[in-house]
Image (cartoon, rainbow, N blue to C red; front, side, top):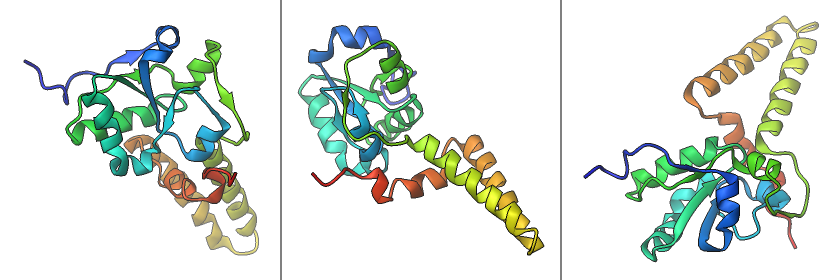
Length: 181
């Protein structure tokens, strides 16, 4: 018998999920701000950076025999969540193939509230702004160019390791937290 924590990733396509929406527990691992902006109507928000604190919520759903599907913007964070939950002793849970981007492209139902930039767009904006500012500052203070190099190196490391320190920092900003209702 194979170990469920090392089995290959199982994905579910948006159409299949749409047809079974009422029978599936959907765990959205994006930031609360992204979730508040747009999400699948029946989903619960358990942000990736807080997932270990909420693993018991997922375990309870699995123990009750419910199918649990992980979702994020494009699938990357859902894969990370899948790995973290498997390390916590849960089976490798299915991931919504293509994430919310695919769900919306397939006209899946969504709840939209406060529209915010997704985390990946925020990272590109902040990184680009820092590079431009560093280059402009280097006109009067040449060592400032090293900031641009540091940001570029950070982007390379983020791609290589499939993590993003800047993204993790941005998740802590009030912009990425739920609005006070």
